[in-house]
Length: 375
Image (spheres, rainbow, N blue to C red):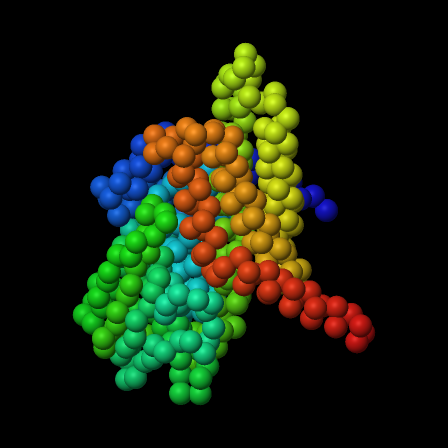
């Protein structure tokens, strides 16, 4: 079993890295951070033109039809560059919900737009702070009209369409597709730790909504899509963690103190070594999860949360210690360290908290052990 990427996939990585180095310098990230733009719309369309957004979207629906491994490669490069675009919301979530449960008409309408960068998607689940659960969902649909409030919704302030989780009469979750530019939808941009990945409050007051998937099957569909998205996000987090490690290493080799490079001091050596170990562990778990995702293997049930937990931990660890390696300068606005720290914490909250995924991993491993014991 070979867990390495093919030569063609490695070539795709190099192409994506060169493209993002040219089109997404830190100045472009800071432009969105400073509020000059909601996201980099030009970069978003260019990513669509390059075919990156449609890597895992079928050709019949406007994508490349390449596969999940290619999308993992692209996700890693997006993480390295901190691309200020709605990648997770649109491609890892909205597109995957459409692929998993959308009607042929819904797929034909929205997947080509997402693949080309013409549209932005979002997923609206949470209805306030705290751990998300079906019992806390209050939004509902009656007569094809959606009422309720969702927050925070990643990229909800710029999205054209949203997949919205609602509660039915029997308490089970259902999913609906809502065009956010239509009547009955109000948006409010929220403050967040990473303005380059904005969060919004969406208020629905009789907004038109069409079912996405079978009624009452929302929880099962969400679990399926979240496993896929967890793997893709893990690669994005690994890309960010690797770049943070490189930044800390390079600074430690350049900065002089007491007549020697600070990288020669034991404390810095150990810090960088710990960063490398956490990154290597996360990469190993992510590669295994990528194989399970691409192969449609049952191991994905364990591999996805494992990749999510280790990648989240690695990115936060590397981003924080990158600041420490830079010393007092690392805390300043002028240096780029805080951009990676912001993104590491922002991505840690996507799909639910780290503790949520840790609990999910434990419960799934317990179920697997129970099945093994019963056999």
